Image (cartoon, rainbow, N blue to C red):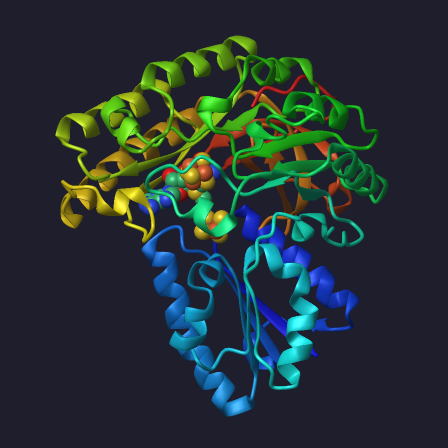
Length: 441
Ligand code: SAM
Ligand code: SF4
Ligand code: F3S
């Protein structure tokens, strides 16, 4: 059958789509580029904020019409499926199957059942982690791959729905992860990103390798040139992990370390488990260990109880840290979470004002930081031709910043040394250096 997948959400969902595609390929199904050409459409969903949910429901309205016209089978996977369970079938009676994130390994079975007009539902999270073990297929020429090292989250930040839809933390055995990465290296993959909601609590309380030990083993794998990981929780960022930056040569100089708020009062209400001072101290340690480390972060404004002084504290932190990039959001109340019932909600217009103020300050900082890289050198993994010009290649520096530079197609797949000639708002422009020199960006 021909299938099409529409995806929402985070890198876990992107990776789940790769897993689902592999399973469907193995089962003999064929991927197509648009819903209208498909026999089955799968929507992989996110519910981290209300907007993501709204987008899903409006898409389902359009797909309902498609189904009426063409008889297309419709399946829902991911976090909304898990959140709503059987209720989703009542709300959207026209769907044919629905699978939670821990059940995606059953996708081929679900389609097969749907073709017999039997609705297939599975939201079990029995902790066996079967979905964790599905290995996505790596197409020839793939340079970068994600590798799941753990699933779920035990942190229960008061605003966050993820622990409710992704379940308890479960780490994958290190031997299994390392074998997968060796296989990826064998097939030509040069960069791996280790994935989990909170990778630095990998194997917490288990006899297996700790996260820094795992990184060190990945660093030893021949053929892998770059290692990244996402996401880190500040409270679990250990001294050993900080020491990996600067000592593991393949570990890229970038960390995504969400701070969420610059006010200790709000951090307490959010149940984040650290103070602004502790967060700042960890950043100092990171910068002392590796002075060129790029730091990106996440932040929420308009959290219940956040007053003007708390917001100013967030602005002060953003101005003093000068993040390389920041994802910022207005608080969105999520059902089942503790923050949904907190008093002193911030009016929507006020939260929006704060968000705009924060984003405009961060925009200027990002641009200034990009400009400050002009004249520096950077190692770029050339990934393909740039969107803007066929004469340009695009790739990422070790700092994770996008770099576009003039170069021939045969450089794709190579680590190329460039000089940064222009720092733009969201990317860098580079010029190829002919000799291999030290990386700076
Ligand atoms: N596990 C990661 C962590 O702890 O940072 C990321 C989790 S979440 C997928 C990504 C970001 O969405 C969070 O860091 C937070 O800033 C934001 N977020 C989560 N729940 C939210 C909510 N209810 N309203 C607004 N933003 C939210
Ligand atoms: Fe959500 Fe907090 Fe877990 Fe991140 S650490 S997924 S923000 S509960
Ligand atoms: Fe969304 Fe689920 Fe990721 S709620 S952010 S897709 S873990």
